Length: 262
View 1 (cartoon, rainbow, N blue to C red):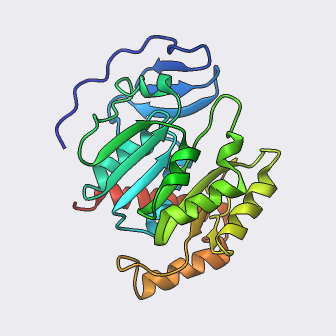
View 2 (cartoon, rainbow, N blue to C red):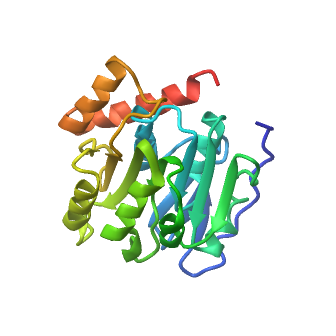
């Protein structure tokens, strides 16, 4: 990957009154409202994952360690896209973002330019996923705006479309806020859609309740032997039982992904 230039200076406010870009020392944040941090970046290391929930979402690698194509719903500050672009060099990444204003901030957050491996599309994710063929190994749903998660990204139809868009053995990661009034209904929809093959890594990201839903079947690139049995254990037992252990698991996995030779 070519060396990066220095991140451009950010103005105190992004183009919209509901989007704020703030730089404090070595940290730059994207906020929907003052103090409501959606994404965070270190200026000294733009590709590192700063927020707990972002590290936790990378736990998809427990179930799909060698994805050929990752689909992301929601760009934000690009933390997940940048990390995957750098540490999964053989993987294609498609990012769906409905807000042109968010996409316009990509340079301030050092998001790489589109190329053969990375595409950022200005589109409605629900429409895109509905029309997609079964070509994705991982589908990360992290689409929020100032009002929360759009209704279309939590419907039974949307989760059914996600399942259909995944290859056999593919993984859906759904980020659901624990305090969302529809939280229980959303969790039930994911479980029903994926036949109960869902791991939630209890307490791994605080108020961000992450569900890892696995489409039935085993692809050629799935974990084998002990690794496969460990994945089944995670599905049955909510990860390592205790929130602290699950958070440590996420940190260790991200550290390993960043360290491993590629």
